[in-house]
Structures are given as structure tokens and as C-alpha cells.
Length: 358
Image (cartoon, rainbow, N blue to C red; front, top):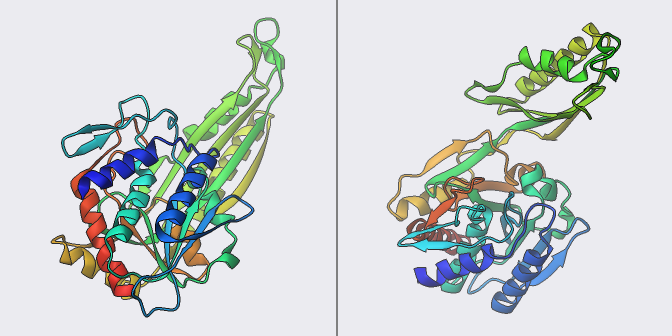
């Protein structure tokens, strides 16, 4: 069976779907689910796909949510998967796209093999890699599920029960332009003001549950001009919501103070992308998953992570959702790979979960 599973993954990753350009992949996925499993496929106004799959040999009325995301990070166009023994990897020029297409391949294989499974609401979101935009803009009136799983973690022995608050800071520093050779003293460098703020800020891992990062900085127009404007994208994450808020306020003040000290101005827009939430370890979705993992011979690990997943949005909307591993390794890099063995284990775990919820 692993040959078919590998073929499905390779078929899926060859269809480009970088964030914002998922349409061809979503059409293909919808057709595949409709043809094989009689799914009724709907699209919301954001372009997310909701596939309602009727159950098989089941006694359950309320569907189970299975969440995935359709997009990949760049570079994700022209993916050529390479199979070497048990390993599927990219050819080194792109990501592989097993994040998150391995999850869909595993779900498809589990449904192909399953003797029974509950009715499902399979959701493929757009632009998850840009900050879970799809699940934030999802039309939740299309869903009736109250429990579910997101297939979007690396290790197949993991059950993720909690995620962080993420706060985005969009910063624009405005100084004053001047000729850098003829009259630099008449200018105010926006880049220098931003750099002063950055130099005084914490960065990376702050503690076991908190991180922050200056992700982008863009500014200046010419080598010989004092730069008038610079823009930055900054983020703060923590499993403790209050820590995120305090750190974001500190970062905002740092940019405003640094700009003011030089006679520049700073405009900082602070947005909470999603809020920390943790589901109980004794909730049914967690208990069923840990039993399924244990039955495959693995020792389940129940985790909270500082990385964001669509599960945060589903949980915020009252759908008790845990995150399961798909087996992908070194995701978001050109060295991304996955083993057929781990994909098989993920399928076996899914089969047990689907059987239990049927």
C-alpha cells in the first residue's frame, strides 16, 4: 500500500500552491475527494474548500472535522519529488510540500482502506503559511462539526493540544531625506532609528513559552540618500497571552522612543493574529488520538507548541481540535523530506481514530 500512498503524495506536491496561489490545487483536491468519496465540495468567499464526505458503516450523526492547509511556503513552484528508498524529498531547488500535502495524502489513503468512518467535514484552508489567514476568514456557518483534528505537525507520535497568542507589529519609521554626500546633517535616517530600536529589543526565544522576531525590514531608495522611510514586520508569540501583550507593548514603545530621540516618527500597528488556547488533555479528541498512537507501537507525546496552526482558530470557534503529526521533517526548507514509513504510521493512526468516531 505504501507505493500508492507515495504516488498520491507525489501527485499532490507536483501541483504548485504557494500561499495566495492555491486555486489549481484546491480544484484538484476537490475533484479527487468528490470522485473517490462522494464529497460535496463548497467554497467560501475567501476560497477555502469545505468537503462534506458521507460516512461509511457508521452510527454517528455529527461530522468529524479534518483540517488541512492547501498552501506551501516558497519556493514551491516546479516541485520535483525524489524517491530514495523509504524517503521522499525535494530535488533541492524547492520545498517538498509535504507540509501539508502529506496530511491530505494520508487522509485519502486512510479513507481508501477504512471499513468504516464517520461523516467528515474536510477543510483545506488557503494562506495558512501567511498567518493562518484561511482559518481566520473561514465561513464557519458551513461547519457543523464540534470535534476534530488538524493534520499539520511533524512527528507522528505527537498530539498538540495548545498553541500561542501571536501578535503582529507593522512598523513604519519616517525620518527626513537628504543628500548623503552634500548635506547629510539635514537628514534623519529612518534606518538608523529602526536599528536603534532593534538593538535594544529581545530576540529569538525569550523563555520556554515565548518568542519574538523581527522578520523583515525594508527601507531606503538610493545609496546616496539619507533614508526617509523604513518598514518592518515584527511578531511576538507566547503560550501566555498576557506575556505576549506586555512584550508587544514593550516593542512598540522601543520603536516610538528610538524614532523620537532622533527627531523621526514611528507608526506601529499592533494586531492579534490569534490568541493562546489549550484544550484539556482528557478531552475525547486527545484521548482517542493517544490510544490510537499507542496501538501503533509508539509512545504518544501530548504537547503545547509556540508554532501556530489552524487548530487555534477552530478551537476559538468552539470546535475541540487537536493537531496530529504527518511525518514531515525539515519543513519550510529546500531539504524537506518525509519517510514512507512515517506516512504509513500516520495512516494507521488515522484509521484507528476514524473507526473510533464512526
